[in-house]
Length: 398
Image 1 (cartoon, rainbow, N blue to C red):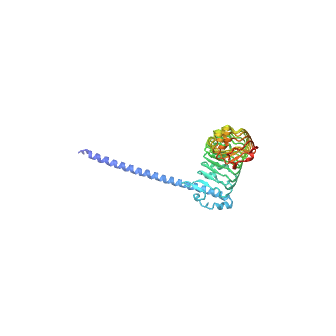
Image 2: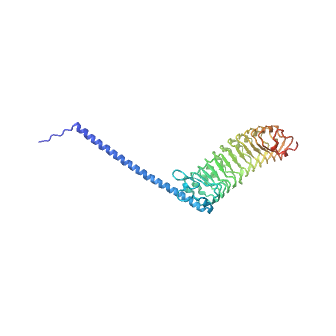
């Protein structure tokens, strides 16, 4: 006798489908849980690895600083007495980021004595600022300072550093401030400095630098302050110095620059201070100087400048200090100088100026110092000029 085939009802099908969906849902949940467990485990492992890397880096930075400390003299080591252990973030002069990596090392004016030869610059890949000015560091500046690839500020002024300035500094393309003044550096200014396109402050004054200013310096369009005073630099001032359109402060005084003042100087519209004094510059004072409408100090004294004082200087209405003494300027003082309503100091002594002083000088109501000796002036001093600050030896007839 044959069995009757089972009749699959609609109800049975629905129950089977429901059970299948439940199983599938459970499988999805289990898979998701497994996935998140794996992700979390990976994150924990990665976090642990990062923490170990950060700790290792912090330890490497600490070791490098401790080795450098050990190279300094005993008195200097005592000044860094907080430099113990493996956590440099608590040490004097040290600032760290959130990961514990050193970003700022500020040890200015501590009286540290020693060299930088034992300083392992490659250990500080996150260093942004290195400030060691006003100490007694000596010896040369190591070329591997270029390993501080993130550095934005380097201050080594007022030490006793010697030798050439390493051209490798040109690789520190994030630098915004470079101050190496008041040292004993010799040789030339590295041509590679032209690669420091972010630089805003370059201070190399009072060293023993020789040769000329490299033309590459005019690539530094963000430079706002350039001070090369008191070196042994020679040659001509770059003819395209006017490309430094961000300059606010320019001091090339006390060197041996020769030739004429470039006419492109008139392009430096932001300039407030200009000092070319104590050089061997010759020729006329270019009329383009009068385009420097933001200039408050113009110092061209003790050069070999000739010709007359440009009358267009009277357009520089912000000018407070005009020093042209110790040159070979001739002719009369232009009456247009009386338009310099902000002028406080007018020093024209030791030139070959002649004639009478223009009455327009009476308009200089803020004038505190007027020095005119060593010229060939005649006539009378304008009656309203304050006599307290005037050198009366200027006049041959009164």
